[in-house]
Length: 222
Image 1: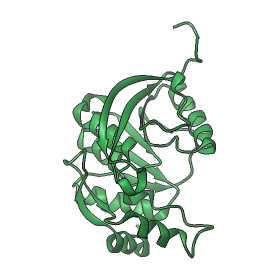
Image 2 (image 1 turned 180 degrees about the vertical axis):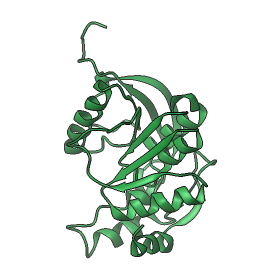
Image 3 (image 1 turned 45 degrees about the vertical axis):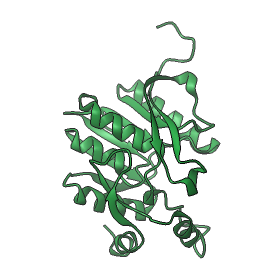
């Protein structure tokens, strides 16, 4: 874990329970807008937004589902895509996953995942990598919370998730109704009303769904 990134996480985020998954504690920002402006200011062209500092609705719902349904991951190799804070990865590790790999493109997020996993007493292998043009490796379960927030991201993510599913991985997604989720590709597993930071979402609660990807084309015979 790069020490500067770890120090930044410790300085700007406080270890507190997650609103909808209080079994897990994360380093979370008390004041979202200030941190957002800080990380996008001088480094606007290169530094990703601080997604790692907040428990987003899709991740909270997916972590809640995995916590309440440990059989979804227990004894299996898990990949948490665009892990952010590591919430979903930590929930999978707590639920008995054989291994958990969390991938991120932001080195501060990688540091946050490592710090948060340590704080929760679980092992998560945090990795700085953009894997979307590749494959999911040996993952048996692929988890993705709140990844359909932009059109460009959604296209890349869907292709990656479909490759994983067609290779035999079970793919679960948490999404709070983002515009670019291709709903026709998924079946609903559970739905929750998830508390969220009003400063980020303009509401206090987001209705959020956990979906499972169907690798077959829409309308194909089952």
